[in-house]
Length: 411
Image (cartoon, rainbow, N blue to C red; front, side, top):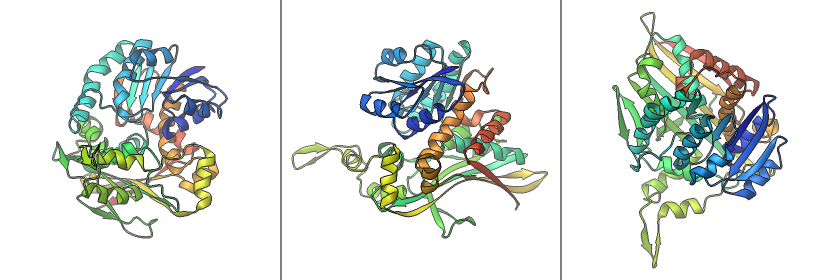
């Protein structure tokens, strides 16, 4: 029986803990966060869990919480990544992170990329030395979408260009522009976007370079824009070994949150630079975040929003991979199918975001606790899973009604 530490009680950590609570291979779950009230509320809904307060700014606090665990699931903000990684090494546990970390380099833009490369170069040998595995970028995007992108490589001999398209088209009558951390969402949206072009990583302006798509299940065209995300960075680093020599990779985003954030960005209201307003020093970003509703986590919160009314319950996650097969130009599309807001609540008492991101992350946890990753050591990004592990991932995903539909088109 496995013992798992889940750090963070937001939507992702909450969903992962709830799913792990149902896994036969899990004997105990430790739920930890600085907010002890949030921990206690979550633990009260679980059978195998106990709650502890943890200050992730303090490495020793994390180490103390992680004593005797087989797996640490890090669902905390990016700044805590280094401490949790170091704690996993200290207690000799496997490690899973929903994202990467900004803790290795202070540069807001390029530091994150250098930090990812640092983890792969420096931490991978450390995890190999203790015989454990660390996987970073394990939510829905990055994470599930990376596995779906890897899956497209089955159908290509060589790959030229990869697009990852995500449309968050869920809108409630209540003001709820984001169904996950508004702070994280707006941080991403306020920065230039990472793009892999002609074999090099470059930065493109946020909210620019529109691409319009209308797949057959959409009732109107959707305009996707630049958005900073892990995927082009990961695919670029791993282009030769895992992506058939890919030369170009893009992440494009659309939806209610983007529509809300774009005018704020244009007005300078996502700036972290303090301004003197009527004698008070304030950063516009902090004011915006402070006034956005927090995402719902528990059933009664979600039900209240749905009962008030849902305006739209749309979305998509699509991978387009362009390349060659048997000398012919081929487009491989992988469409990720998953319940929307209302269906996700009916099935599991979750939002659609929790269903896809939290459960997408949980599937990596499930592979850890079931021993599917036994023998793998080091530190990898989620797009580096061997193809047989990708297949196993989607076998588990199908049990949760998260499926892939592959469409292959000759160009």
